[in-house]
Amino acid sequence: MTTQKYGQCRDCGAPGPLDSKGFGYNCDCANEHDPSAGMPGGETREQMVEKKTIFVTCKVDTRFGPKYGLRSHRNAKDDIKALDWETTHRAWDPQSRKWMVDVDAIDHVKAELQSKGYVVVF
Image 1 (tube, one colour):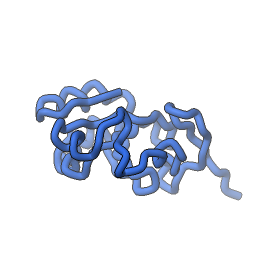
Image 2 (cartoon, one colour; image 1 turned 90 degrees about the vertical axis):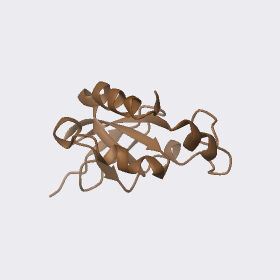
Image 3 (cartoon, helix red, strand yellow; image 1 turned 120 degrees about the vertical axis):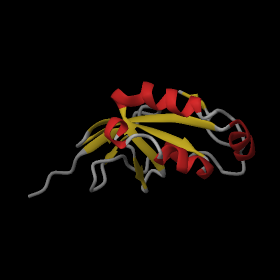
C-alpha cells in the first residue's frame, strides 16, 4: 500500500499531492495569473523579461526536503540550469511549471542569479 505525500503552498497554504519525484503540485495560486494580465508582482511578461525578474513563489515540503519554487520567463532557463546542482539540487517540476531549489540554498541561488543581472523577488 502506497501512501500519498502532501505538500503545502507558501502563498495560499493549499495542500496538494506531491508528484512521483516528491516535488510540488499544481496549486491554483500557481496558475491564477492570466498570462496576458501579468505575472506575480503585477508585471507583464515583457516587463519580467526586460527586468530579468525571477519570483520565489512557494515553499513545498518534498521527499527530498523543503524546496522553493522559482517562476521566471523561459529565457532564464539556461542561467537556472547553470546553478550548481550539488549546492541547489535544482530541478524542473513540470506539474507546477517551476524550478525547485533547496530552501537551504536560496541565498546562494539569489546571489548567483543577481550576479547575472536578475532581480529575485520573494
